[in-house]
Image 1 (cartoon, helix red, strand yellow):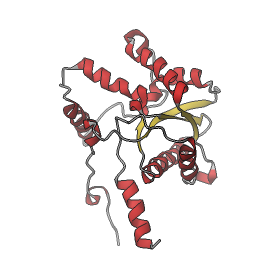
Image 2: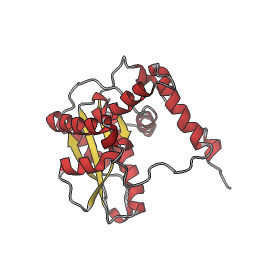
Image 3: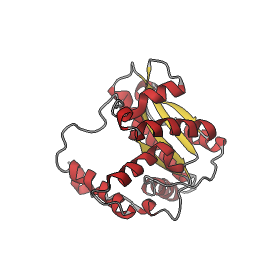
Length: 231
């Protein structure tokens, strides 16, 4: 394969990736998931610490975790007792981040016909996170509590590598911070040791071609807006 076609293939896998929020129930063979994780494990990490730990959920295990967390999310009294262990988002939103956040939210709800006052449908849509958006494969990512911020940076490269490797195989993904809110239920269900904490979840499978929400592709700023070149 030529260098040009190599670059085109890699570029396509990266630029064609987007968060999919509706999947077909088409099974993904275990060996394909295994191969994606094998490729992604080549992601860089400081002094080769390789901080990632992954639980792959399919079938009954995936359905049972979804059921438990779905019930907790639908119960307001119980849901209020669950919070993330780490701050994914800022406590104070400023421009331009707040505008970007609002835009993707209303773009998604607009596609789905969910109005600003339709809190019931908003709740229903958010709850789909905990069904892995019907994907046949759910991934839960955890990390050793002893590791520091640098390892979390490394983890991001690992997650991106999974999504790109999946895209190269005709599969789609959705990385989901929402799972971390219910880390206590996840820890109990997966029987995680006290030394391990939940980072996030991810849906993996074949995108539903007719789902309107899958037409949402977020905008990106041009390079000139976030980079400067010094000679």
